[in-house]
Image (cartoon, rainbow, N blue to C red; front, side, top):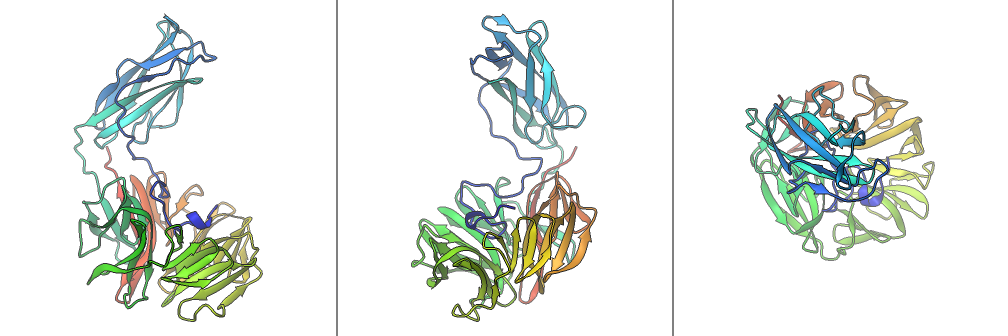
Length: 438
């Protein structure tokens, strides 16, 4: 995985313009008001490509037809190749969703038959012939199925009763019941069902768990109108905890109150390390941990022991390794934990805290495996190799959400796993959104 400081999996800040969430099969593409036709010459002999309607109507779970017109100057372009791509949601009659190629008839037309999704919305179809393209929208109405909202699932209770109906479906899940949408950070929990905005004017945000500062809680640090701010939430209390005016607005939040600006590393409002070229903050059990590259050597610190002497010197780990958090590193297919090699043949990996240990879920020679404090713990043979790891033993594959080897939900469009809880009770959680089904 390519996890740089400004985009670590589950660990670094999410700029407002980026989508680092996992994307499934149900995101709607925004309305396109009119069919677009671009008069560009193409090898197919098509100079103009258009849909015969700017907007098509369809009933949820029903079928609909659309027609493409290809022209070569003023004449229909017969026997020309046209490729059609569908957005997430729409399907071909056989249930597939990938691009399909068609040949125009003698009138220069292609007739399409499509299957609509269960959810209401507007979806865009794209036709292409060489460099010539056209787009039309499909408006789906009449849904009779429930569209699920953001949910919070707890692996220890198989509980998914907490939902956040107020939070936009298009929001980016940051983990720990925090979400980012249109410059606003939302938060919800079992005592704040529905969800609420905790800050606006946000341009960076990262969520995590910590029991520092007197709160065993889920936290978010965020850049609010140019000032770094932290907010915490528990079942009993929530609110803005502090601001960090000494931290430059140009810094990157690294999780657990760490910030990196240039080569200076801050913990909260205090610069604590210099000559830093890479870093990753994480929760390690009763402390905020930091894996940091200084002068070509990887070190591990935490806030309780201070930043004068490292807890671990990880000299075996190559300087070019990617920090995954929780003292795991990935370099050219080799996974390390602290100063020891764990395994080779790794093509994906994420690291996290899970109740009392440091874990990494890794794809090793095509099989998902879990490592606890550097030792093999479990194998997830039923999880497809193509799945995306979400942290805390959750995986998403083509809309199917799994916890370890067990399917949790289907029709999932976006999800983020995390370590959460409060008052000494912690578990593996996941926030996810889910579409209805036909």
